Image (cartoon, rainbow, N blue to C red; front, side):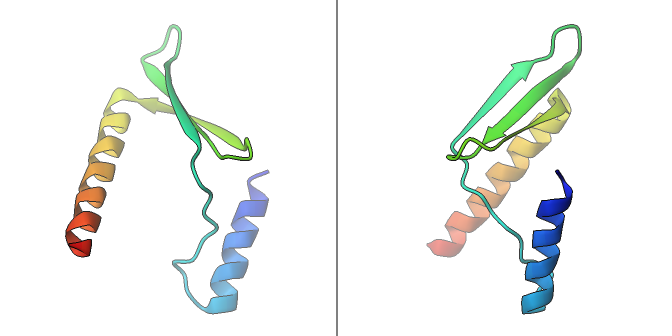
Length: 81
């Protein structure tokens, strides 16, 4: 299952000679759930066409992700203004 996205990314990068290109999907919803009997969370991301992927993530990793999103969003807004 993970081979197809990797193949698509490489094909795009090779075709346009740009290592930054990748296939991007819109995000329709996300869920964060506590794992029973574990100190990790489940982060689930879903596209509008119902493609869904889930990740086990610690509280620290989730905080780091939130900080990175906040930092990148602030940078993006400042560049637009």
